[in-house]
Length: 158
Image (cartoon, rainbow, N blue to C red; front, side):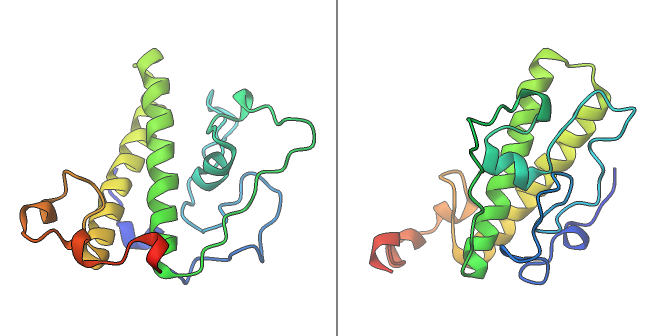
C-alpha cells in the first residue's frame, strides 16, 4: 500500500477541535483517514484511531461504556500538542492491531491496516522529533551531547 503521510495528515488545517465533531463513530475528528475500516464485508469492526484512543479500545464489539459514560474529547492548544495527539492515536491503533494479530496472524486486512498505522506512527515521530527534539530514548537525536531535552523547559515549567 503506497500512501503519502502528508496527504492524510495536515497539522492544524485538519483539526476541528470540539467544534464540528459529532457522535458518529465512523467520522475521524482530525480528518486523518478516509479508509472505511467498518465495511460490511469486514469481520473487523473498528473505531477510527481517535475514537478508539479516547475510549481505550479500537474494537467496537469489545467496547462497553460504563453506564452513561462519554469519553472526554481531547482539546489541543498548539501544534506540538496536536502532533503528540496524532502520534498517540496512530500508535495506539497500531498497537491494538498488533495485539489482535498475535491471535489472528492470517488476517491480511488487519495486517495491512497495522502496517499502514505503523508506518504512519514512525513518520509522525520523525516529524515531531525534527521539529521539537527527541521523543523516545532510541531517537537518533539522543547521540548528540548535550541532550536536547536538557535544554528545553519541562512541562511543569511552561
